Image (tube, rainbow, N blue to C red; front, side):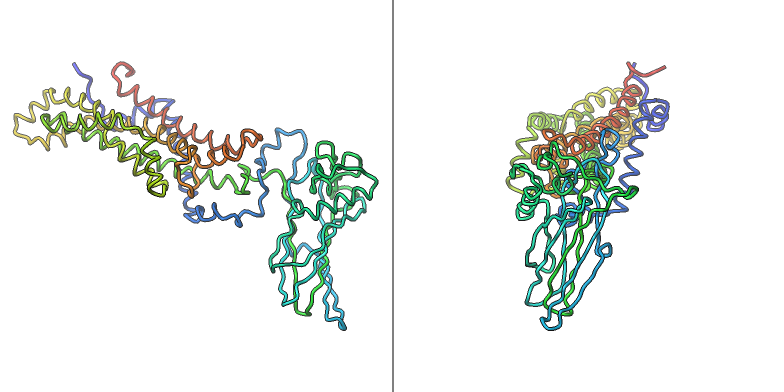
Length: 474
């Protein structure tokens, strides 16, 4: 005798009694809340901002999450930013020469145990045909003055990348020679030397020691002096200094300075939508086709089964690679291809076998004897009986599609624009995150992929115990 049917109400009631099911539902509820909050807070503009390199220039590059400080023995630096209002301005005009001299001085304290990752100075101004001459000096807490560079501004919004400018680096090396040191110019790192104590290890990043300047003590602050020579009374100039740290936010940053938290949060609704749409559409179609073939039989069943056999041997990956060469892949085009390739599958055959047993049940025979039509019997008597099993299959197949999206992105077959967990992992792989130890870039999105898959797997396990007669609890 076959097992009695399990309805949706009984399915949900038994699910709430299972620890595994409750755990999975709780995880999915948390992800759903995150999904709703991300869409509401950021909207679709996240996609545009994510691929805009100028939107992230204030963030440090490849910075670890701030909470990871507990794992380090030394205090890692956070980003220090001096905006236009933080600079002390002094200016005077030479009337006879029609020149305007502007001095911008910014001060800050630095009490960290490690050196900054980069230093950038942004200068903006309004000037006419004659461009201003800018001279930059770095004044250390020990009183030493390092001449950084002197150059003519080419644009009204210029970026002087102090830590990456070869001219600044040469001037820093000259300063070290003037102190009686003999550094190897090839090993000198600008941002390290500017913050290092003056000794023989100053030119070696592995042995240099930080010259601290703590606001709570008696040490003097670091200062940067920008001296500009303007050619008009009405010309203006302003500066912004960014001393990039090595810690940032809750999820760190990548090699493009992007806040990974935004990409990871945005990846949650994408992963859930991708997995749910794929699994729901494929499972429902396969369930209906399997029921149609088993109930009507004849050439209908033969056609569905032969097409299913063909679909079962079609490889996904070569088809997606072919499609990627013909069309521009997006997350939605990949989704459409997957759904089309999943219209027939294993669930079609398993549903057929279930319906072949159900159609022999007494209540089906009674419906036939009362004169109910085949479509009515299929719709009202057979499909409701097998839908709980189809729903369980949907839940169990979602993790496969979530993993599939990540795998496709890792192979370069994902959406090149939309930030997804798989895309972040793919960029981390190509950026050498594993080799160079940028663990947060790989670990955080990978853990979320596994957590999402585990949530659906726990629910699927609970459904299996409910729906499988051999595992059903008394």
